[in-house]
Image (tube, rainbow, N blue to C red):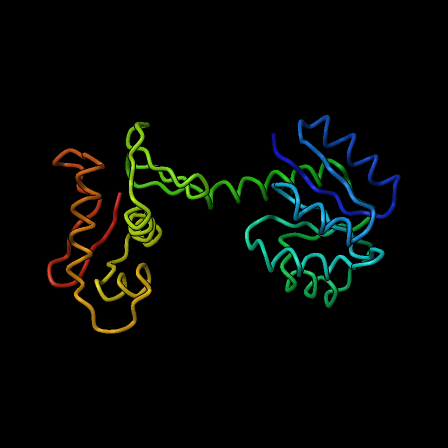
Length: 221
């Protein structure tokens, strides 16, 4: 069950949203000021935040900024009466994913929540042929069978799949995956690639990661 945090100082709106979202099968927690809202966020795991703009103790913008300092991915939707272009841009620049003006349709809000949660889920899952990678769970399956990779093998596979369709040079890989920005023996990449291919145990005709001789590697469906 997805857990939603509501930070809103109007009790009537909180109760309306809480009841409606629980009927939609969401778990809901709420705070009526910015400071308590951020404390709740720090102490519990949430999947999405509904955030009022004008709040006591910490404004919605301040809460959004604080959340983004610790979590760059969680969807944040502003609920606010502010609706000028400048204010909208300010909210989005602070890190909000969406912006809905009060008064709003509950059905529209639910659809926007679904979009944000769906987009988040898609970002957390990578696929390459029969290979499926769940970034959040740090798991890999091939044809629904679990595959155990080391941390660096996982990082390398993710990097290639995220860049699917593009040739990744050994220099790029050693810089982006290993964080090494000086001359280094890139032969280590081939050792890791051999280990990954062996663990994925793909058939001969399932050449989803090709070696580009003298250059690097490319992942393709």
